Image (cartoon, rainbow, N blue to C red):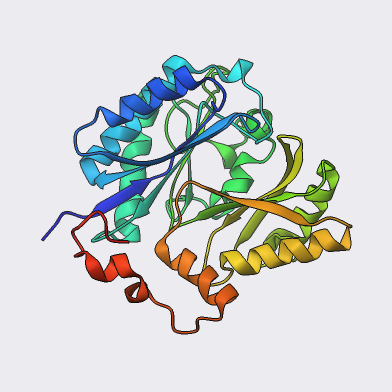
Length: 303
């Protein structure tokens, strides 16, 4: 029996300096047993999303190596970008993969948080790892970015779970969580009016009365208005349903979707959901995909 596998999807606050991004990434790659799956860097958001996987101990070591590299390479006090941020290592979620349960991911999140605390990072736990109901949602923790956290940290309700109880303006804080798969999906509109993207985001996100399990914000990226979404439960709202909601809301404002973007990775089921929706393939499953039948489960070429 194989040891349980985990995915880590850290977001760190650098998307412009390729040399720094490379050094931070290489610190993780150097850990034996870690497999880097994806790196997505966005200069407008000034943010990178790294995805890596492995067994518990290598993933934990990779996360700590990443944190040390971020503390060495980055300075939050001089960082700016479209995306809200509160730390050089901003978010560190753990996702249970084959053989692992959500409880396993929660334990890993607590282990990582304790070690990050010893390294000098204030840590807030979120998602399934949250220790307080009012801190379960990541947007609630990140509200107002670093400045918002700084204004709340002296409140006993917002005392960090691990690490220092005061802020270092150069490294900030980190949110560590345990969660299921999340798909980060962006839609670019055929306008440069950021206000249009913000209105669309408000209409489609759950907190605005829109779709369940959808978080959304509007940004200006590369001269285009962008609706940036996190789809937190694909059973409730798959990618095509979210996209059609954006299209409808944008059309009401005289805009349309010009292109879309996947940030990081998505599970095969997310792609199959899109194919079923747009092609009308009611019975499409993974076994209908050639590579899934051609290669065995242990073959990395299998989807």
